[in-house]
Image 1: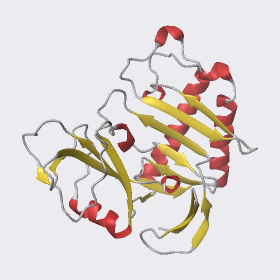
Image 2: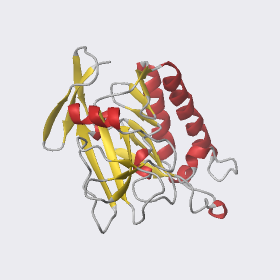
Image 3: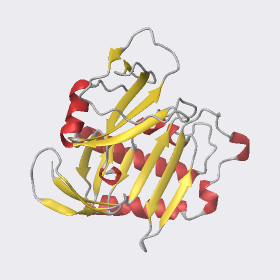
Image 4: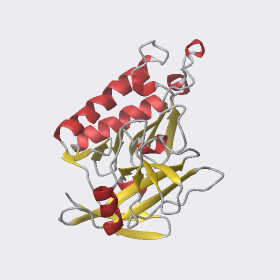
Length: 246
């Protein structure tokens, strides 16, 4: 696994990830990104689902924040060209008005950087589920298939993605759950705003390692419950961050 230097707002962050290797070019926003969040959920749940596919300008692709690998330059370019061709035509990103998705359908956002550096973005609720009802145009079906081929390839053959950089999310509970654990006093607690009942924090280095070691990570809709030293009850979860999320 390589060492990255990452641009963030206000300066440069030298990200020392697991493993060694030479630094490579600063990474900005992905050249292509597919994001999705679940429909109705309690605050914070959606942020826990990382982008199913993110491909950066140097060809490095991340699938589900679980694996990553460098795509051949021709494959990365082909994805960019395909996505630009589809998204720049409004007719391609219109759903059949008689086929509106259920209110709790996942929210999909697809964006791609054009050769001149601008971004094209489409909000395609339910697109990632395959659109068996045929509510999207054929061009979007073909792009979906293209994206899934790359995603599955990265998941199957890429290196595991596990870094000392996590996003920790907590949701305040207004009830006492039947079962819970005590919040580890040595793990930084996200500041939960009373009016939003939700808080998140980005942790790096030793703080991230404590989270990875001491807080179980849930892929289910029910998160682990905790009682804080102050006696409040929380549901909390975490995930690895991608390079543009630093």
